[in-house]
Image (cartoon, rainbow, N blue to C red; front, side):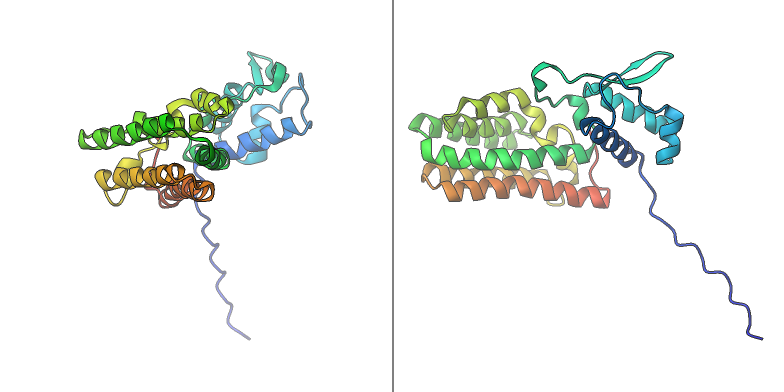
Length: 253
């Protein structure tokens, strides 16, 4: 008779982080709403039903519902339940501060910026004027001054991207940048300065160096180079966040 083999150990699964669970629920319910599974006026499943479906705590469910409310997708009626709201007239695009509550949210906005600002840089290279170049150079200079004065350099960082948008000659690019404001700069939402392995000074110098590459391509009226420089700049920021998120070295401020 063969000796009995000991039961194999159950493999340990990676712990599920609450923030990731919130995002999972938000994305699932948002998709159901946008695809018509839940229509305006419909009541969402109860908190207990959502808890059972996703195997999460009530705290996680309530945070997810709060994010859906902040995005104007649902409304909670005390003692009755949570209901799907009608889309606002005109379906206006909106990114609220609540929509940038996780590192994953910040990465998603960077992905949006890559698509928009890459083309903006190409148009700016074709249409820039001497005044536009002077405004970009001023932003670059202000960025360097901020670095020297131990600042996070967020205002001149945003200003540079704003000047690129203005140089497109298409007011909608500038209007969108104005609407988004400085919250699109990752340093306003996550501790990228503290998590940068090269240290604050070198990190900011590298960011401004990427800005200078964009500026040079626009000044040289080279649309392809401008697009490539902008894409590289924003993609670098995205990949730094992804890498640090995976290793747990970056967190919200």
